[in-house]
Length: 224
Length: 363
Image (cartoon, rainbow over all chains, first blue to last red; front, side, top):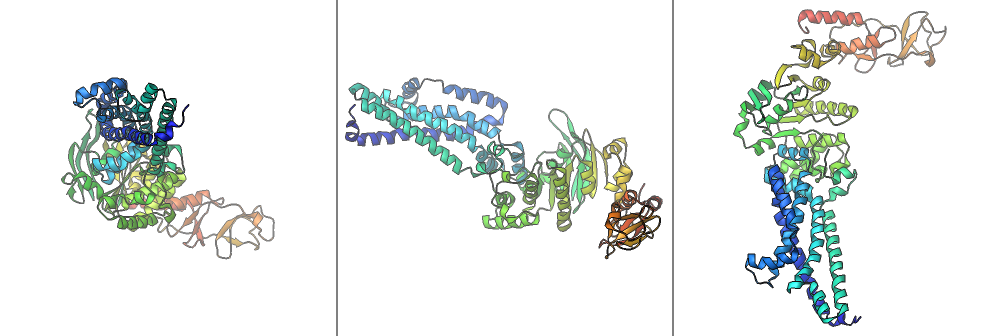
């Protein structure tokens, strides 16, 4: 194998890595922003939950390549617009996260919510400063799955000429440069591990109460 | 003062949780709502701060109709202690206590200073401030719950079965602590419990509810024990109510009889019982003169005594118990410093009870 390919193309590899990261993570943030209100809505009534959770979940079964090809028609974008990929991955993120957010909010103990109401919280502030923080551990777990899944799914975009490290696969395959393909695989893997570790660390950092003393019941968010 | 006027709560499924409640919870006193589950006691409590809205009727808090207030603002002015403490698991103890001041718009520093004062008031060590609720015992969490409810100094405090989830020993100390706090603070407290003993211990007045949300009786605890309104209350108040009712009768005027005492090292009596006391006249135990060999009294001769009757603060119940639990049949009466002043007998207690009945202090 010609490992000399790597140093000769280091600038390309770096810019593709950066592009890959943006394409993978922007949809995670957008998906989170959409999933929180949807997950909240799912927790409001049984009907909303019975509709929202399965329907958003079904979105995950739409084949990614089909979605990337169809979206330009729906959105009126050019086929090579990275927006297509970002929208597609945002949809997948929502598909994974709505259930997490709904479950996480449902697991906040009723007595904690009643206490917050009795202290004089209005519903929106109570949601933001009591319910959402307590949902963080479960939401972060869902977020990690979505981020890792996105990181690998960005490579599909290369099939229709969109950016990211997937281009190292298509290019390496067409020009028969095994080192390029291997570099792509290793970097995608490394990126996925890095993103996962980063989210884990952030999740722990913003939920110090889950790491104290009396164990499991705190991690589950129970106050009883 | 909290006033319920013709308050009814019907839930959408048609059940009546509270049925035409008329009741006044006096300012500065503890009013206890007690009854079996499904009797509407918690619903009645939660209507005061509009956690549940009444279907009909009016509730006044210190003269103002609760429906005239925005619910969130109303609640910030009413302390609330919830079952199992209901602390916010993601906030430190200090920030839990500072919740209401922060909602009222105090700055963070003021709110935390106030929270630290409250922690001290309820007997929580300052080093607890930075801990999370999960690091505290159930009893400590309940103290935090009380501190949090008191943080903005509300005139009214609602307590919803606050001590039901802790073990009996801790519960008793939390009850004592609440009575101590109340003697300092004089809040208007409504306290919900299903435990009649807790109700009788804490309540200045006790409202007994029956299933279906009907108020069965609303009286001082002594009256509840001596004159239950009907069979339901009688059953609910439970066994030994006659004996427990003696706890609410003052023992003022109860005759104190003579009591034979000896000291360790003295010669004991040749017959009959004598109380052995130390140099300060504090009781050590009883001596049975019939069984003791002649000569000096030694520690080995002592028979353990019963309960002691404190003439400064005791009730007829403690006097009777002292008599009944004493091996000699003579109850040991002591003064506030624990020194023996004489004896009480069961006969005298019963005579005092008969006098109290005649003068109308008990039924």
